[in-house]
Amino acid sequence: MPDPRRPLVSGNWKMHLTHFDAIRLVQQLSYALTKDDYAAVDVAVHPPFTALRSVQTVLDADDIPIGLGAQHCHWETSGAFTGEVSPAMLAKLDVRYVIVGHSERRALFGQTDEDVARTARAVKAAGMVPLVCVGETLEEREAGRTEERVTSQARAALEGMSAEEVGALVLAYEPVWAIGTGRNATAEDASSVCGVLRGLVGELAGADAAASVRIQYGGSVKPSNAAELLGAPDVDGALVGGASLEADDFGRIVRAAV
Image (cartoon, rainbow, N blue to C red; front, side, top):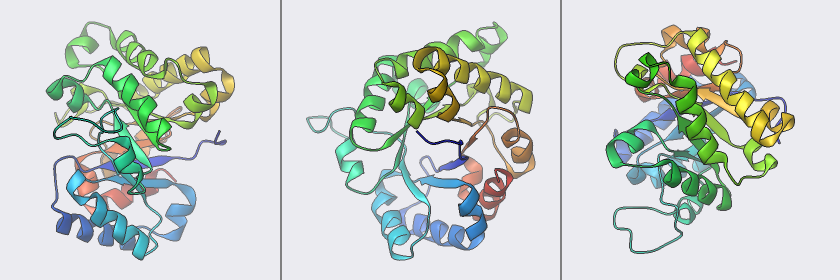
């Protein structure tokens, strides 16, 4: 299991960019980031499915040390699942990270905790790293249910994994109320919940897993607040949305994690 924890900054491009646009952005990122950045921080991008192959080709051809990530997959290896892609398909494209259980997949497409758990295990079995997202809605937060909600989501996702598997994955705390709403969580908010998640990992998988698991914060991360958020205790990186679509902005966020 990795120790010490190395920051991971991931750019979730969501449903943006054609494959031509994606190539351009990766090339811009290659100029925006330096060897010193890569030496201190793991960087990943999560393009739409239609751009994965194009981005993979550019990363390989230009020897750019950015990890390739996917935004979602099904838990089955193959089958009659129109519109889905399998972990095996992603692994063949040298995908390293897969976002599992993003709040938009849960809210808009009905993904359940059971679906998230099955997908996380399938991603791991295919040799990739699941980036498991948890987070509460505004209603849950105002009702004082933040800790209850995020721990129940995380517990369901981690169930059945070995301590080594848990320690090697990534958790991302993404408060739903702070995503694209203009409302921002404070560094104290992020640190508090990430600390709760680390405590849960210790309870489920032991101290070594808790020490090595990487916990990202995701929720309107921007260059203006990145240093404060990424400097908070128990925050090991960021899952970045809109700001990852601009190379200079994303580069500034990466450097805030150094």
